[in-house]
Amino acid sequence: MKPINETHVAEPGLALVEVAAADDETAFAVQELLAARCAIAPADRTTREPGEPGVRLRCFLDLRQEPSS
Image 1 (cartoon, rainbow, N blue to C red):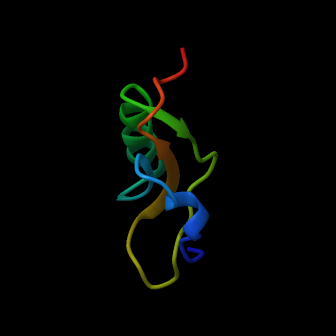
Image 2 (cartoon, rainbow, N blue to C red):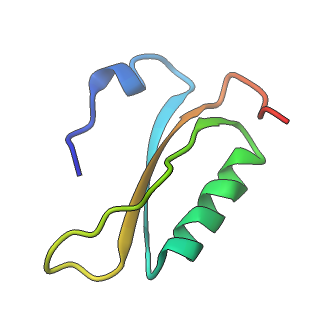
Image 3 (spheres, rainbow, N blue to C red):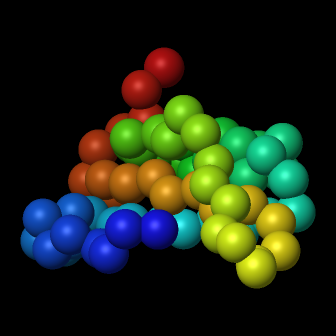
């Protein structure tokens, strides 16, 4: 995955979350759980790192805002 950009965590309440999961379905289920609790910029795909098990997903959270409906 790309390095974390300081813009994504520049202020209190902003966070970057990386999910490591066995499969896409599990990674996207975790993302949905996060989206129910706070505003997120969701990922539309997962990535696979050669030589590492499972998939990874990165999404950005804004804890200062309510989740969108």
